[in-house]
Length: 56
Image (cartoon, rainbow, N blue to C red; front, side, top):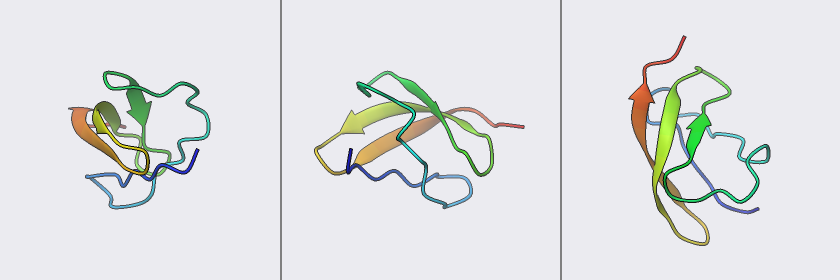
């Protein structure tokens, strides 16, 4: 998986390797700050997210 996703909260890259078959509507978590994000848009190389929960 070559898609990139940058956390909107802490601006660090999110490791997407634990998420198989990632799709719009899936929930992911930033491994740096712990914020919960919902995937809102995907292309072959980019993922856009929306904050669902402010994290830990």
